[in-house]
Image (spheres, rainbow, N blue to C red):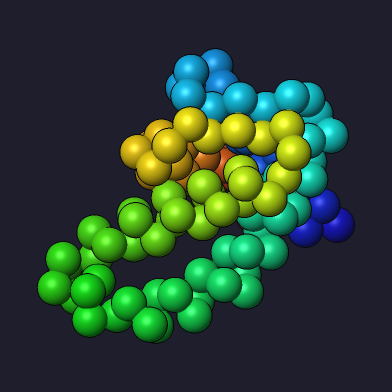
Length: 113
């Protein structure tokens, strides 16, 4: 049940993004639902591999390269899901950052344990 709630929270976070950034567009609720699912799968499967492979660069940049990885994965998902559009690399980094902040805030408010 908790997984479904987190999925819905991430969907709401994706739906909020176009109101904060004009460079991100989502065509509707179902698109956001699918994009949140794909984003969760990509972050669970591909992100750990990329983090390990880019560990030297991440250490040299004192962890800031993680923002690049998150932005690239966010942009990748926008290319995979029809109806979810991110205009470019910097928009993807900003969108990934805002997406994580919004989903964290909603999770903190709604999932108090």
